[in-house]
Image (tube, rainbow, N blue to C red; front, side, top):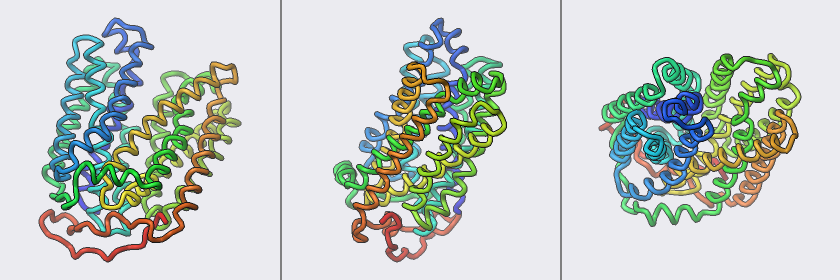
Length: 414
């Protein structure tokens, strides 16, 4: 794998850290800004709002910008948003800063995924994308716990300042390691938007919203479920979340090779196993050791689904994959909001703290049904081609030396 993937993984590490570190610092933010904890929770919603809006907006605005330059612009915006978060003098400006920090999130992942897929041969594209996503999973193991501890000890502003420093490091790595990738002659926002009309892209995005809603229905309430049903202390929940991150990392490592070999079967199996794991969690959540094992498995299965969904969208969007790849992360955040809402709904209805697991399982089953429907409608092998097949490839570690173009490959998503 090219060294440039390290730079993309650092970008993903910074994004993953800033996305989730706020959740562990809400009491400190509330005290520092003289607001209630529920009000402080709006900084999480503000970031998600930035992701949903920014992914299609910034990707469209940068549709003619060469990919490396666009990555640098988005990374600079990421740094500015986190610096603004660290320096915000009042809560209104902090909310605005979190929206700003979230704007480049989806576009960075979308452009980064396309760049990663074009650094390698077509039959290794999913492995390259999953290598980038490793930065996101490692953030759940290292970045979020470390940022939370830093914010709790020194103040929440230091956590955002540390994320900004990670962003500066990522910017430098992108400058040094990522090769130039010119846009094609047909690039432009209209070209990208036309690709979004593909039926398979639409089904893929709906699948992401519904299917990942099942994961977020459980993840959003994992800490209170554990504290109420297993008696685990609040101080130990950070270690549990890190264990969840370990599962995500293992799932990401497996997802790349499996997706390269068989995209749709990997997606089907991931959703089916996730539904089964969430049902199992419903019956084991009251017993600490079995619950921890199943939670690790759930983390792995959530990551196992991420790569095939991303590759499916990039494949079906033909030669204009950037908007589809970025919109995938808007779909994830819609899934986050919808899953958390449904999980809270059943808890408020008195169904018990373990009830979100059954909601999550049901959403995973619906996601599986949508994915199978997409596969059934995509039986024509001519429906699309692998996006990496027409892209120029480069030798590993040599930004200026091109490899011969790969022969067109059969669409693994058909």
